[in-house]
Image 1: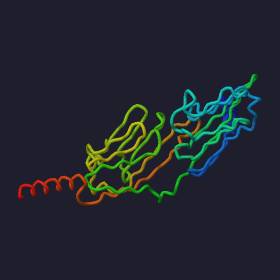
Image 2 (image 1 turned 30 degrees about the horizontal axis):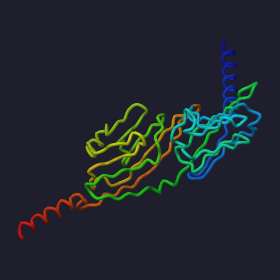
Image 3 (image 1 turned 45 degrees about the vertical axis):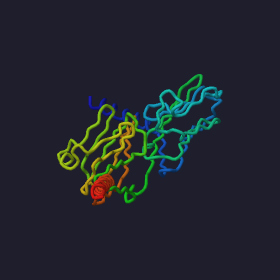
Length: 261
């Protein structure tokens, strides 16, 4: 019995090696382009299909009668709009102006008259150093929006943090706002999110809202653990009167002058 178990474990190990042997790892700096090569010719294939997180993002047929990228494909979404290029001779896929959220597993399916083969690419897009953040300044009492810079993918999980306090979480089916006691104490009824983009909105800002905000996006991947991208925002809430309060004071002063005249 033990011998059979050992044989089974060896076979399982070999199966894993075969399964992941064809994974091509690529790394690219955010903003640069990356090309996923097929190393075939389109005319030798009936179809070449590209998938990201099981969503078909590009397709090209051997006779070039069927070509689509991103939103042109039935399954496509807004994630790669105007950033995908297909080589008509090879079917290789180029992603331009890469973003952190492009990190993940890309699957290539080569379909010929006699067979279907697959190839897996693991792409990592590394961003700017953590010391570089998007800086935003706002007057106390005004609202501020921290833009995610993406169109939210339904399969992604987006989490917003302030000084390591979780203040918002967006999943496929629901949005949670300030469920932590520390968050409720600091941001009660003052936090909103844009469900389409995941951007964070803080209303009626206070001095204590100044600090670092962090957006973490986890992309659900098919065969390996989720890829995580992080974006940081530095917010400064200036003391003093907001523009709205100044406008109210101007109106009051003007009315008083009218009464005195």
